[in-house]
Image 1 (cartoon, one colour):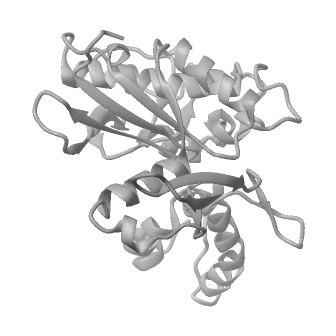
Image 2: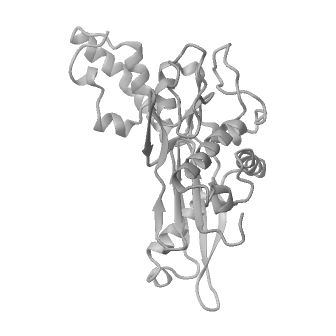
Image 3: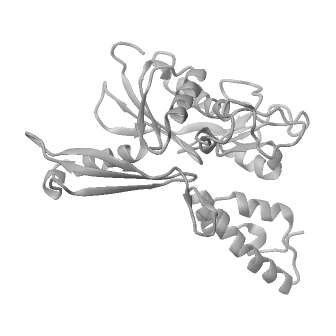
Length: 320
């Protein structure tokens, strides 16, 4: 990192989506969003607000030549982002997902090539650390492509968020993944703490009067694949109030029935399972058949996306 970097860059390495925001210190203190170029469909690149945290490991005959081409690499050996999620729904045995949750899974060797967990026998698996590194590498290359060689990402002031519930090993592995991607100088910030900082900035004129010493703040960060809880207490100060984190929740929440609920993804799977039978019965009564591909699309697409953009075959015509 240079002595006086121009940009302050925040990276959310999410379980389901990654996002990047930045401040251009040469112009203002405004927080700007960084649209992320990525393969959105075969042989097509476009910028999106987030980079879905999905990694597709293609087989030798899965896709036509040039399908995964990026502006900075003609024939990548893998795909991440929008198209990786779509193609992975078609061939799940080649899809890596939830790498961030695997980083904090103490029951497995997080440095070992274990992903995709239910991968096809011919797939060359990768470790959770390597998967996280490839997402960060894509972000670094996308930044270079958009912002130019004069301000490479590795020379900026980078803040990388992690769950408060990450243990020391998971944090060290996150730093290692960033290092593999060429981002060796960065600051880790707990995600609930980042959310609280954002609230403080939004209420900079009033939070000192809204809170008083002894107040307790519960920050609930329910992400795509991680539920993160932090308890903050308000402390007195000489000139202004202070904030201290006093407790964090477990990385995963377990329901009484024993099912692990890690975030919105888990809720989506529960939603799909509960809706699946009703959907199939409706199709049977109408004399139609809900094919495996459509069921895969249902399960792999975000619930909010399904509500806003129903599958054409569900709203219009039979699926076979």
